[in-house]
Length: 44
Image 1 (cartoon, rainbow, N blue to C red):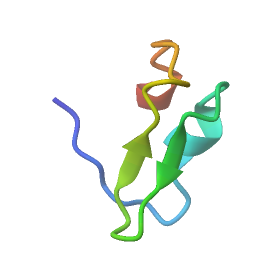
Image 2 (tube, one colour; image 1 turned 180 degrees about the horizontal axis):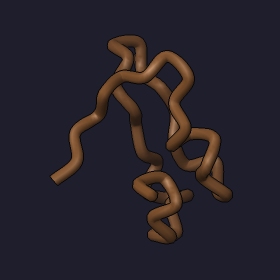
Image 3 (tube, one colour; image 1 turned 120 degrees about the horizontal axis):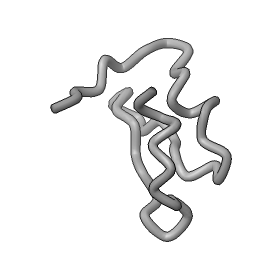
Image 4 (cartoon, rainbow, N blue to C red; image 1 turned 45 degrees about the vertical axis):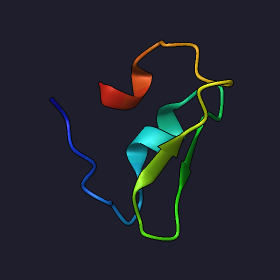
């Protein structure tokens, strides 16, 4: 299992081709399930 590290410069957000990730006010990453295509680039 992976856990969000609340990175300052979140590479997972940059890696997402669908722009399905965003950082919430608490620093954790939010996934927009309607945009996510399941490619898993964010966890590579």
